Length: 184
Ligand SMILES: [Zn+2]
Image 1 (cartoon, rainbow, N blue to C red):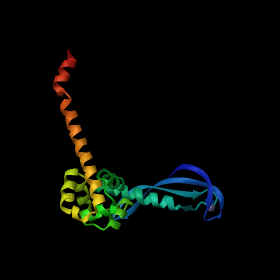
Image 2 (cartoon, rainbow, N blue to C red):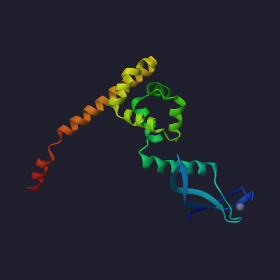
Image 3 (cartoon, rainbow, N blue to C red):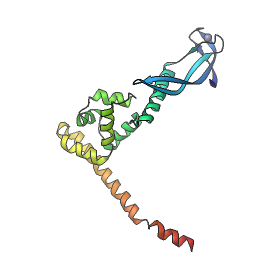
Image 4 (tube, rainbow, N blue to C red):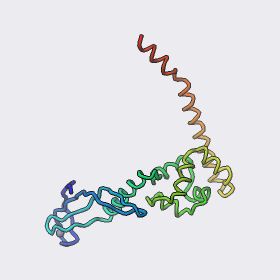
């Protein structure tokens, strides 16, 4: 157990202000029947010696265990999901309609819940714009005109960016030639 810092805070056991150690310890949590080792941060009162965790610490604990599990299984995370929706400029509701997943489910994934295997595969597929475009083309009748206009604009922007990237790549002289020139 390592001490990260000592702060003055209320101890729920003493029911008084105390010196509280914020400590870090390796712990194991079961996620989907699997042992996941992670760094747990919690509080220890210097007076009574008892430990406790704030709501924030408990949330952070679950999130760090989930992060380990996600990394181990290549599972898409909340930040990636939010970033993907922003890239396509699609709301949670519309995204859910396109994917045929409940919008509360999408929301829970963005709050950190780990997607099911099938949903994870689907989400990773549509993170590639070409795949999203395919899905969008066949399901866009489910969306409002306003949503469609926003997504169309976002996809057009992405296409322009891709083209720009390609042009930049093509304008760079071949590596070998440059390297030879540099040697002279
Ligand atoms: Zn105490």
